[in-house]
Length: 287
Figure 1 (cartoon, rainbow, N blue to C red):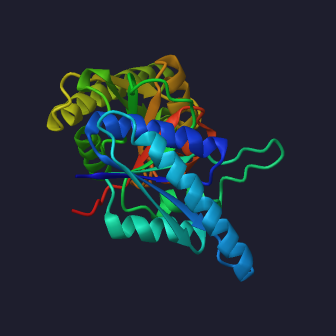
Figure 2 (cartoon, rainbow, N blue to C red; figure 1 turned 30 degrees about the vertical axis):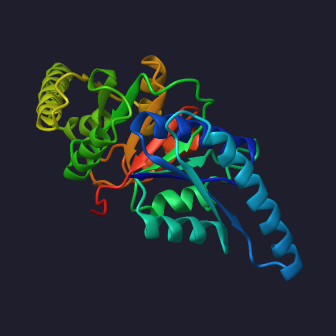
């Protein structure tokens, strides 16, 4: 039986992650495994006390979760650095999915960079789901942003295997980097030629996206190619709002260059700013 791993720090944010993971596990008939990492860089008596309390809290939580029909839930308390503990344990069991709570947001300083959540997503060899919104039902509207690269293709193929929602509830989004192309072509094209060029670019992108979807057996999904006049991450988030999605999917690595879209650093910006759940899938998953 495949395992969905949930890292919890017992905060309200983690409670949302546990609730979402339980919904996914019940739908996919996967085992749910909760872990909590106790920082061992403290006095031994403090570590001992926190470990005992953590075990009690987790046991109470899995007793509640095991009452859900068809759900099998287990737990572990680990000692060490939270980031290293989560990643090390995940490496050991190779979960179907790692679920974490949202990062903290502060008004005066964005502390996402360098946090356990961000470090885990960068390091992950498995799909990582960051839960931002209270879950009430299984995912109904999933948006996957893609740059049509091979890395993105592998991530999309794995998304289909996760079966978080039916194919017809997925939207494949491709953001066209029109401003960069406009800048490059502005010295050689008149304004009317530029207009035609961008129209042709739109048609080409729509065909490429169609071919991309068909190669993944995503024939029933919605397809959207949009020209962005600003940051690609902002275009992805704007599209998520326009389509009222409850899950945004990004590949955690991708190409960089003229056509750089959301992958890599832009994926981090989506993770940083999204109020909706975000699933980050690495292109090279262990078998």
